[in-house]
Length: 381
Image (cartoon, rainbow, N blue to C red; front, side, top):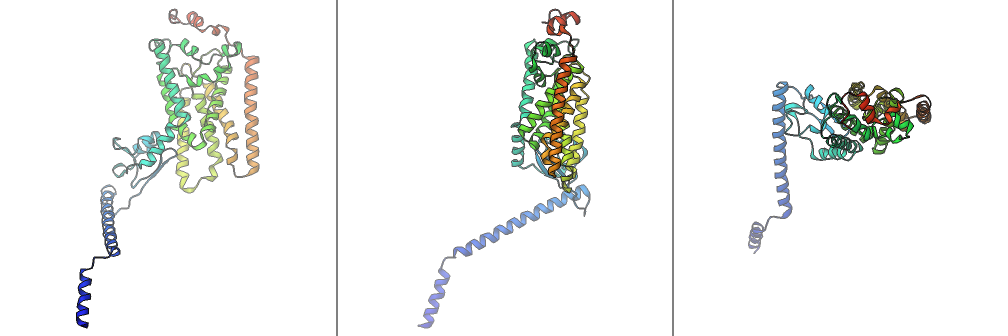
């Protein structure tokens, strides 16, 4: 009977189903083996690529590219100068398969979809992009409204007729002083003399402006942009009262001036790993100032607006970025100096313009002024 009982138990064990816990352990082990095999295969492919580029036995020397808007790319290889230039000028294009080259060359990795979507969201939902679209739309409308581009003898910038710029709110010192059209201190920010003028300013605004807006915040960026742009127009009225003026370059110079203050105030707060990023920002800052300054002497654009916007930007930067200083006493001193400087700039500028500047009164009737002073302009307005 005992032997029969033992045989019965052994038969039941053989016929019993496998317990779920043993099944789960088996599947988990199988998945781990598959994952390990995939990791080994990926490592072998990476080693083959590294050997093809740097030589067999060499270690990859990866570059780290970072942008405030578009995120970070940790590259397994060195980025070429052309790729660094692409990333510095337009990082929104990097990581796409249809771009002929990208960070890392043959070792480039696709940009994570989440980072790419976040970058486009920052880019599209910004005052810099919105204002840029308005500026493009206004230039197109002015050109279409007059039936096409003005002849080069009237506007060599490939843009609308001069009287059209005046009608849409260009800087006209006579109208500002004698007719009290103070809104003309702000409207030139939205206007541009032509296609080339627009491209330089809007591209700089979309590249640098969006980045600074993400760093500083939307409203801080907008206040600096508008205040510096208006003061730039005031300086243009003082130094060049008889010339029409348009463009956002004064406001952009204000952003760059405030950026200088921002970098200096946070210089000691830069982590060792971020020194390269800070140096890249300094390079981009110098390129931006050079690009804007290069437009200082073209028609309908003037150096006074650029210089005035830069000075106003430095003062505005002292006000809005003083809280970033580490010492409380330094915050108060820098903030008070900035406020006093801004008040002094505006008070001195307005008083000098109202008391000492006498724009040509013929500019009050700009079409008549053009007919009298520009040969062949009789039938244009």
